[in-house]
Image (cartoon, rainbow, N blue to C red; front, side):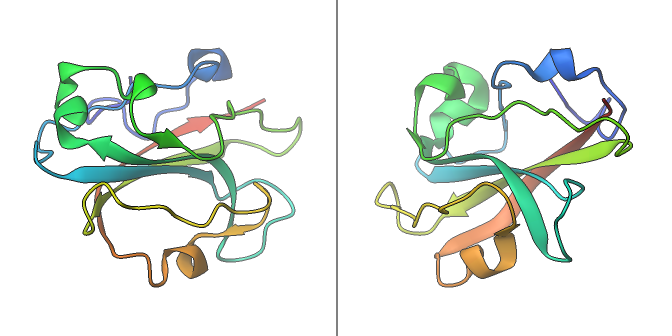
Amino acid sequence: MVNDHNCDVLLPKQVFLEEPLFQYPLADSKKFYTIIMVDPDAPPQLDGEFYLHMLKSNIPGLALKGKESVKTVGIDYRGYKAPTPPRGTGPHRYMSLLYEQSDGNNFLPTVPSSRSRFTLGNWLRDKNLCGPVAATQFRVQY
């Protein structure tokens, strides 16, 4: 698990073959959350574009507090795609962003048609999400 003790360290990609466990002890048990995981270093992205590794919403705050696995709750829109940076592209940053949903558990986002060239800023517009309220980053190299 990536936490405040090992955030932004270079980790072997094998650590993330399966969807990571997300926990947020400060989550409000009565609210719902969305997790987005992106890679800003995946070619051929332009500024503001990312490779989308995960989009999951309607995650109960209680689950994020560690009471149950986030892997089994919420609505998974794109499925988890493990980090696989191409050879010769150097270390890639993988950012996990947690947003609080203003509309309770009624958040039904538009699903990006492609994982590649995902424009996070445009996607977030008019979504009624607060945050990110928490974020973490790890790095992986081929």
